[in-house]
Image 1 (cartoon, rainbow, N blue to C red):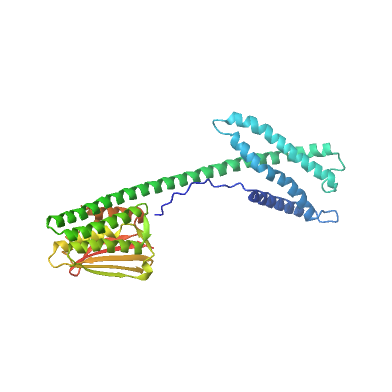
Image 2 (image 1 turned 90 degrees about the vertical axis):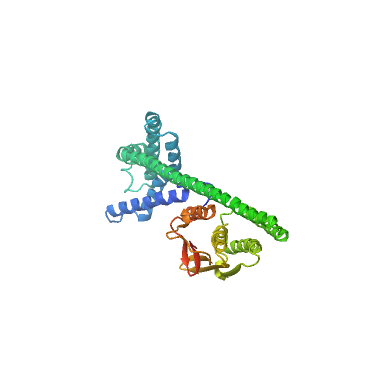
Length: 366
């Protein structure tokens, strides 16, 4: 799941470029149809003259479209404002249709073409004749623009609701992830302090001081990245190395660590503070529970567009049917929850018995 918190922005449909293109296309079609209908002959006007007349008439509605959209929204015709809306739009539609037909009449009289003029009639007579013949058609155009405006507005509202829902979901997911990370930090801190406390009780002052210094540096790094959900694998591995330096002190340098991190994986982003709980689990529930266990192997590679990370320890085997999500420990259960929040079903996290120990495997989409 991709987390984002960009400011929402309503989609905009009414741009002059689109409006002019649509009405010009209508003019093109109208002129072409009229040209086909007219009988071929010497008096037949050219297609360009027909297109010029039609373009002027249709662009009249094109330039009025934003205004009609606005007034349609300002004076709505719906269940709540049905009569108030009609009181505005009925006279407005009659006036605009009349103006459009007047423009039509002026063009017909000015060009004085036999195919357009009505036997030399005056502007008034031409206007009246066109009004009778064309009023119904242009009246429907006005209301068609109103209906299209309402359809676009409804679409905008649906889009905005989807944007709001996605942003709400992303904020919820981010809050849940932050809560899970805040569980991990105290868990890690308390375990390390318990180790330091034990060292002090056994008068291992030098080791305790070394661990305190390392812990201080680790906490600084953890606090610096607390707002980051994702960070390069190289940074996560660097954090793990520093954490294991502390654990080596506890193990009196008997921790046999092997790191095999492919170069191409280092810049792949992974959830911050992801590996530490798994490594900690391998140490506290693996290496410390078996005499002679000290092997810890961490590998990372890319295969089939997934980042594969494996963490092996030669501690005691897991009980049959063990599942990471059923672990009572905060570290593993929080890791399972975080991965589910971030990747849904598009990931794998398993703990299995392997060889003489236990293998944790992670597969994350790149």
